[in-house]
Length: 489
Image 1: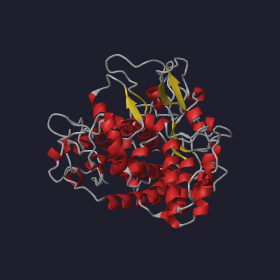
Image 2 (image 1 turned 45 degrees about the vertical axis):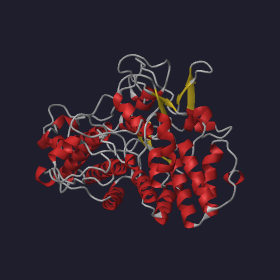
Image 3 (image 1 turned 60 degrees about the vertical axis):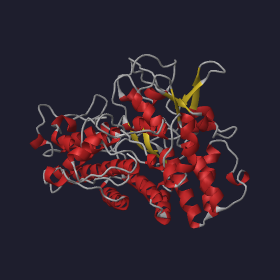
């Protein structure tokens, strides 16, 4: 059993004590919200609609880098990436499945620190909104729904990365400083409860920065809606093996053809794509998405601390069937044969553009939830329920868009087992390098040991079944003696 590992920058409780008012008002230049003139004090944050909107917009804007971060680090844990020579040690530890948590080196804290910080801010917002009579009712409802939704989103990733986790619902240090780990089932129950509440409160239309309707043709899908809560519910139910509920929630999205359709492959990741259920808009002048910035290759990475440290693995490249348009349009390469380096090309805009000064010039937003995942969720639910024809129909919706033959012409037999294997494969080539899907899928369908016992040695590491969970940060264990470490660390 390996002893695994550094020092986390913030512990869960430290995050509470170092919380600053400016974290709430982190509305950067591209966020279309009018920040009130003058200073915004903590006491006044929830006294007007405008300042309350700023709070939740600031929380949402701080999710901007998380999709790329989890896609890279969790993809390194799985079989999606190959790492460049000279990459930093932290990423090498992810790649070798050799994370650790002790007094000298700590890995795996990256998500814990930032996600709990944001959960604290969601809890603080919820406390400011609860019973508030100073805000317009519809504004308070929407913002409460947003806070519940974002907290659910963060807890979903924490429970899948670490297993049982602390579940803070307050900002009171006396209630949070000695929290114990909550079981996975109970965390999912809390997530579902939050999402059901959020769905009742959130608007069914996409709202702008003032929480009013967009003008005709100006809609952007960046604030959470009832549909985002429904889509995340569908995902949580499929992870919880609640097949009927997963089918019901995914169907709600699929049937809403006025809002959602499977755009052609080349349009999927554009701003305002009808495949998008929830997107995050860029916040840095000169850049589109963080994914494009970190993953698109225009030269061989070099130099100390270089940013682009990963390229696509042969495992992923070899998973595509001939003529799959996703390989043609969502993957690109740099270099000359036979020394080609491949990278995800879902987001085309990867370079700094000094002329990119406002949202109207943006071409791409980061996608967090999209329609094709809902089809694959429903296909999986139906296969597990015995509705094989319905499952086939959903798989084929995704395959036909990618210019592939019908699934029944490819698999050896039409059975639940064959269809579930086909869905896992379809998720691999549809959702690659997005929000850690591949790693979580391997874990939840119990394929993780089968796959990683072969992959990890080829990456230069040694696989142990305990590696499927990240270690609890060492400093948090010291600060809270009631916390326990995951096995193997």
